[in-house]
Amino acid sequence: MLVEVVCYTIEDVLRARKAGAHRVEICADPGAGGTTPNYGFIKQSAAFDDIDTMVMIRPRGGDFLYSSEEISQMEDDIRLAAQLGVRGVVFGVLDETACFNRPEMARLIQLAKGLQLETTCHRAFDVTCDPYASLQVLIELGVDRLLTSGQQKTAVEGIPLMSELIKRAEGKISIMPGGGIRPENAREFLKLDIAEIHTGSKIKVPSRMKSVSNVQMGADDSQKYHIVVDVEAIKSVVETVRGE
Image 1 (tube, helix red, strand yellow):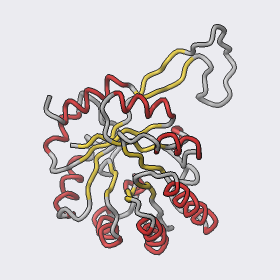
Image 2 (tube, one colour):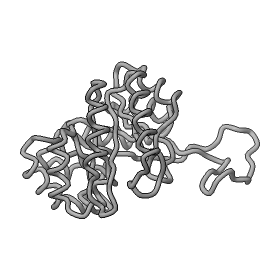
Image 3 (cartoon, one colour):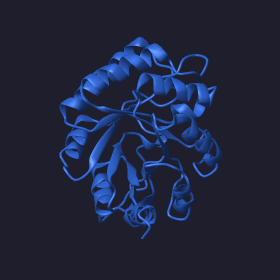
């Protein structure tokens, strides 16, 4: 089973590689659940030949109802990701009724496929109105994989729906569980007929600065530490899915 790790910095990618992960999904803005990362981050991650890089294509946090200008921005970001040599892109676009915006999704998928990129639909799926109808849309559009928590707060809670999605998908799209998958619950997902899982265990690393200020540059941006991928936790997940 393949293990994908969500990464917000190049240090995260280095740690994911050290832990034995097979693929990374790189993003910016963890507070928003992930947005499109910058050029330099994409370029550095894509340069590693021992781990695949998927790039989040999301112009902002909040809902997944985008303007025409935001869709154009997403197209530009997909083109840039392809130029930098990544494996694929991750996105999801909804309409006012919380269903997939089929024309806009088709537009982005066709662009990505034309650039030889894999496509993942992210957890926009988890707020859609009808999971089974939404799954069918993704299959018909040719999306490669679906990242989902089974429309629950955590993937463990979403296992019942994911089990049904896997059955209905009939192998036409990969269902990739994600959302709160940690060493202590990773074994639960071995019961599912899946080929990949998504995890993002983090730890706080103290600042190496000799003098640390109490001033914060953002709501959660402490000068005393930064948050990185937990190597030991990811390694444990990798070992679990390998049956070690």
